[in-house]
Length: 171
Image 1 (cartoon, one colour):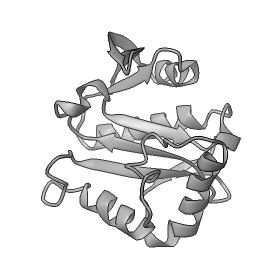
Image 2 (tube, rainbow, N blue to C red):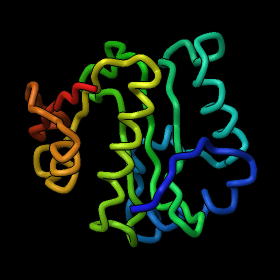
Image 3 (cartoon, one colour):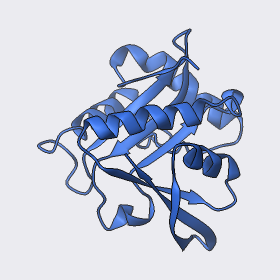
C-alpha cells in the first residue's frame, strides 16, 4: 500500500471538499478525525483552525494540540483523514488520541490500517509512548484496524447508549 500522510494546505481545497462531499452523498454526516471538516462552511476557516491547533501557543483553549493529516494515494487523491491528539483532556478521555475516516468508495482496501500505522510513527516521533483509541463495539472494521496495529482492549464504556471500547497501542 502506497499512501502518505500530509498536512492540509490551501492547495488541497478542491480535493478536500470533494472528499467531504462523497460522505454527504452517501448519507454520512460525520467524518471522524476531520476536526469538524464535516461541519464547516469554509475550507479556509477550517484550515486556519487545524493549523492553529498544531501548536500549544495557538491551540483553541478548549482543545488539545492536534495534528490533522490527509491520506493521499499514488494519484494524490485524498482517500482518508486522520488526526493525532497529543494529550487527552476530560472531554477526550472516552474519545482517545485519534480519529480517522476513509472515503466511502475506498473502504475495505486497507487504507485505514495503513493510515493508523503511519500515524503511530508520527506519534512516536512526537515523543508519545502510547495511543488510546475509542471505537464503537459494532464497528468491526475499525476494531480490526486497531488490532492489526497492536491495539489491546483497555476498557469498555457506553457512548450514546451504545457499547464502546478503548484500545491501547504501545508505540
